[in-house]
Image 1 (cartoon, rainbow, N blue to C red):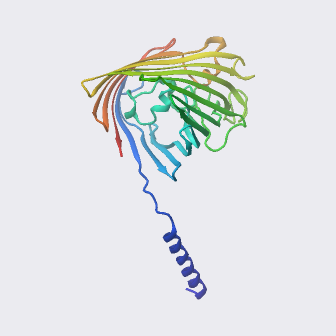
Image 2 (cartoon, helix red, strand yellow):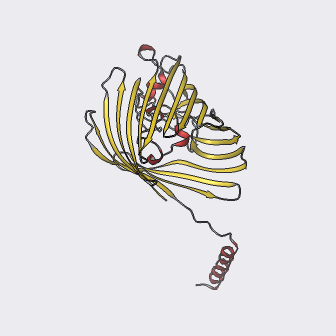
Image 3 (tube, rainbow, N blue to C red):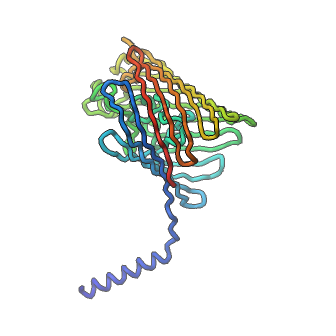
Length: 368
């Protein structure tokens, strides 16, 4: 080694050593995990009985300072052929007071009760399946963006809680036709300068185990395809949406009830379908009863309704969604606090089509 290089190496080594000595102590990163394994049997043609590995959900919250925290959630999902990695949530938050916390990143959209309380771990929800219309963006029955990327303000004022988001709008690649893609939530670059607004206002009734909520979303679905089905270009507006939702949860003794109702006002843009505005609705109602300490019986009814035929609601036509009802019955057995086995029977009944019955046995668990 030449003298000058040797001297430089020693200097760099000394500086690095000094930096290590003066750097603040590192905090260990605590990572938790949710996972599940299932077996499903269905009468749908071409759908064989199958074992399936569910998503592996890794998450962590790190305290950066007295009032600042960071959070991430990665899910290794099984797409039927291989595992793919999805960044589900990823944010940094600063707490000014109990009434105001500001955060930036990727979040679960503040719509209703289910999406805010039951995340990607099957163990924390009563049934292995989510209500179909609240499925995540890549789900077969997804109707809403369940995530957003932007800024979020949250807070609690006595019995009232709120969450407001200013975020990238959602998009869809219509190149392949109806239902060929998924609702896209831009992580890096928005399709247009217009942003989406989400909001949820919650109220906990004093002295009662009753929570009520009001949701709002104003969002434009933009074109993401370069060879789009409507002759549109990337960044062109497809449908302007206004969604208002109501939700509630009541619990007493061993009984609980949960519901969400959403009203859609979907305005298709000129050249997209009939270019008209349409109203639609989606809701679910769920009842649960816990007995013998470790068992819980659950029943849920779901429905999605919108204009069809010659004057179809083009938003749902783009998604490939069907007018439908779904009934779910489940029996859950909590082995302990870390894992549960659930038997679920679901009947999906599309309007004008054959019903599909699916029986699922799911073993969900957590690691920490």
